[in-house]
Length: 459
Image (cartoon, rainbow, N blue to C red; front, side, top):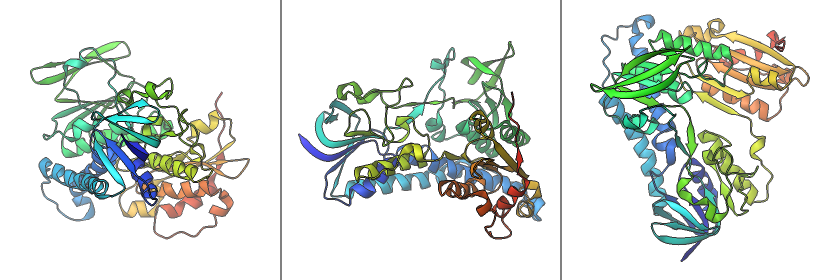
């Protein structure tokens, strides 16, 4: 039985971060991966989808040629070439990471599914290995809602959609969160008809209503049909088409499409791990219980990335690994210390950090708010990118930023500036004094503070 200093189950982005530090020591490390090396980000998430976002935007901008003073002619989408570009980018990432793992004299890569035998032993491909410290990084996968007939229909998740070689004629999407909404715009710009079915009253339900409404408006302007307060109740296949029955306000109708994408939530990949054999506890939602240092209830076993339910993004997975490495070296970094930050990579993108307005008011904060439409920002007008707006929220008691949301050109990049400000605990009066480059969208952010007004909490 081979013994290792460290065993890592799963090869997503947290694993790369762990290995970057652990391999600097004189250690033996086992990495176990039953699917594709690199996890969802490299293979089915960030890397391929953002490659598609770039292609979709280029196509969209080419069609706006007359607006910028040139004739782009009849823009035709070659979906095969779009996919070839995407695959070239994601395969290079996968192959680069695989080569590194296989060539390292400190790492042994096991290609198979790992499961616990006891708290120190993991079995893979019939071989048992032991480890001083074990890290679980198995991520999440799409979960199918309870819809009559779904098991009889070849529905798509984000992984299977990216492997689809033909452009859907009419893509039906169940779920109006960031996955569903990004794919909706991407495939609409490629030429597909797209319908989004959202169970709740607004898409991007975690956002303030003003941002949700703005995103819905520009997506509908591009020809995407969005049905809110609508539930999918049944689905079948007839004459080569997906027949989706939906209900809104007590009325049913059938929507016919060529393909069905399920983007209605995700569940942790824990079933194959045999966690009970190691005594590892789960939350009521099936995630692995982990403390502020990503330790499970078994002290030498850690859970990092989406599987611990403490984040749902690559950057939170990487941060988990950094917290673990800091903990191993005696540091005091905690997962609970990080500030929530993420982006929706539509065009224009939404970047958000900290609290939303509704979250801040719910916590009883005295909230000062300032907004600025992109139509009033010179750089946005110069680029003809005036859709969207920015919102800053400030604590009236402390002069500290509570949250920021930027829907507009560069919003996904500008938001990082506010993350640094909030992490560094820089007061707004100090941020207001900063000189930023003109002409940029971000240069107007400090000036927004001049328009702060207190928000009255709703009863």
